[in-house]
Length: 118
Length: 112
Image 1 (cartoon, chains in turn purple, orange):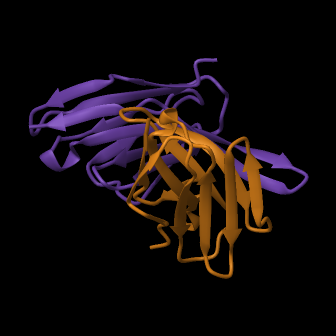
Image 2 (cartoon, helix red, strand yellow):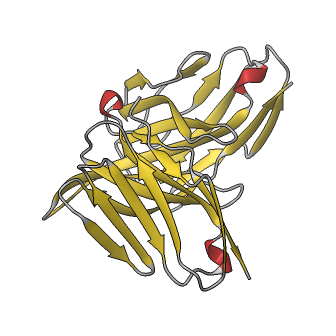
């Protein structure tokens, strides 16, 4: 399995441009998420999806759109890039694991996309 | 916010020493997870501890959880240069389904 893959690895945009960050997973996980990571901070949730056709907003959704037409893919669209969106973007997929001690979600991360908006 | 906070922000030790990182959080949780991030890479899941567990081990890692104090610690024993990374704790994000709330992380440097 390739796990969670993201493209591109690096991207430079000018203010006002739009683009789509791609994310795919081959683990048949029902849940997928997008986070951004800024220097000195933990990850902040942008949008997430609990299954094909279902998306919801996270902590910092403004300026981003998502769609989930298939289980495998969860693209993130920047509508009109702004310098404040300069960040590293991580896609993750997760699934619920159960054991004798109970159930918990396990989240798997892609390698990230480093985006700079000038 | 129920964001976890790691302490210290940065830690520098010699190879072979033990490294201890702490995490505090604000609201009740179902589970807490620790992740490692090497520079320029994605996050790698290390260990999960459930709210009804007090301690878990995985190789050289030992995680403790004190729900009365809303805190957790990650101990790496006999550290190696390859352990140099940022370490994050994450708690379940009750407002966002199956997702997690991450702290700002502890940057660990293990010097040879």
